[in-house]
Length: 181
Image 1 (cartoon, rainbow, N blue to C red):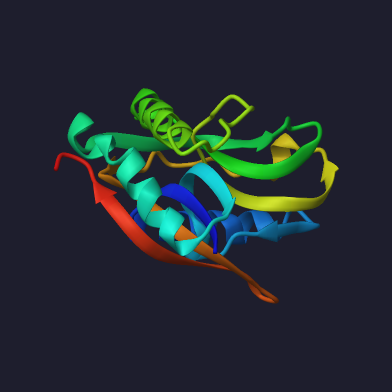
Image 2 (cartoon, rainbow, N blue to C red):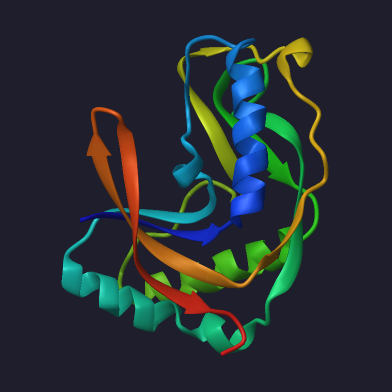
């Protein structure tokens, strides 16, 4: 199964970001916008894994259950990777909770290394993906909608199965680890 680890964002934040996507979609063309169900903070894309490997991954990263208590997070603004001048991915950046999310990412990486899963080579930046460009293009300031600061609680990590369909990816939770036991 094609899988990734992520932090869920609550429905109220997803609803808000869906309205942001709707506003930006009328301004920015050639972007494949993420559907509401696909809005989350990705920690680690795993690629294709066997079903029994999913349980091994759960065990390997379970230290986060007791190492962290739920903590506040908030969204900040809209940006692009690798840059606004050559936008391939349109994202929402995080304001509050960044260090906590980065710490969870580091512990996840350590756990995955015990299963001989290669570490992520790029520096990790917590974000919520809004859309992906078909071809890199500038993301202009006039096209970017200002964001309200929406706060939520980071309370766990989910392993999602990603099934690719003609309508886009469908994400199904496989298991979750709640923070704080």
